[in-house]
Length: 345
Image: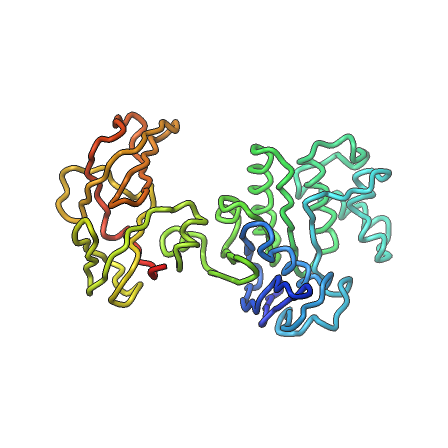
């Protein structure tokens, strides 16, 4: 197992700063996700870790040793790409064992380790099949087995599930998580899918425009985002401007009591509560606001309400059988322990 450290890691492409002074530590045996929209620098960071791309400045360290002078093939970092890149003329056993053959490993050991890897990725008995005889999910499992068979120090996954349908993606997420925990291998996963990052990762590194915005456990991005942009990326658009004074926030709709008062200093703030935490409550006195219903849409397991709260669009989740009419005024309750404060934009 290997600890990975990125130290002021920076990459320019001409005048464009693709990755801007990233600093983070990935603990040995940890699975972390680089998350962000397309073009934010996720894959560029991954390529610098493998050595496929040299940084403009900064450093990549494995167990506190700089990797900048170490060629890609000697770093012990292996990447699985979005496209599986299996050799079409080789069968599964030959594809999986390719890396060992290139290292001069004896045929008997290759055969044993191929069998071990196929059992690990839940495809025992597939040795003689060709790539075109496999489904997309099976091909991606073979690509994963081919990467793992050389027993790398670090496993890197560059959006490997993007081309799979929803059910296959779910199966592969569970498989990757299971294998990673079983082997204890340090793993870095690149994705633009919030759900995927939250399901897979021990910690998430969120990037916008080449800049690391927040590096934290998955739950923190929902409960304690650092900025409104981060909250929006995790599908929370509920914001209400106010002024914080101690454990109270004065808003256009009245005073709110808060628990997480330390989140921001006194002064102008944004109040936010996730849609699923907004309570449709007409009895609670504290932290009660009036809202106007704009629309109510049945979503199967809940009803999604679009509300007007002091001129701001808010969303709330009600029971599946909740009935509301457009233009109706309702009361909503913001639980004090679920309110989070953000810096004013």
